[in-house]
Image 1 (cartoon, rainbow, N blue to C red):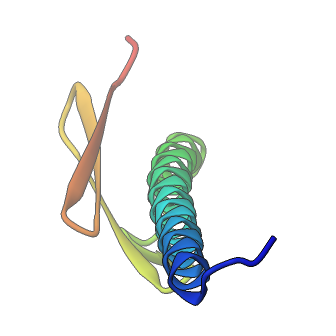
Image 2 (image 1 turned 180 degrees about the vertical axis):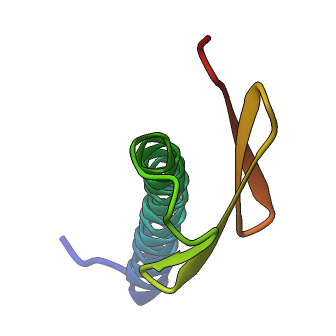
Amino acid sequence: MKSKSGFILVESLITLTISVMIVLTLSYCVSEQFKIIDNWEMRSSAHKIMELHLRNSNLPADITIDNKKYKFSQTKSLMKVEVNGKTFYAQKSP
């Protein structure tokens, strides 16, 4: 059987298109997962800072962890940590 060159070209273009779509989809999924992990890391660090302030009130209000600046503040019943435009809250227990 003799294959036609036009068929091979179309088949190659379709294969290339599918491969590029797969790579782009995987890249997008991985970048979104890193955003989720980064958010959980900020949340965990913010709550750790709150815990450290409960144990030791002499800690500075501004703490830098992994090039992210965490700013701690508190009122009588509420603790707050701000980082990268996000705010994490916790209520103090009596």
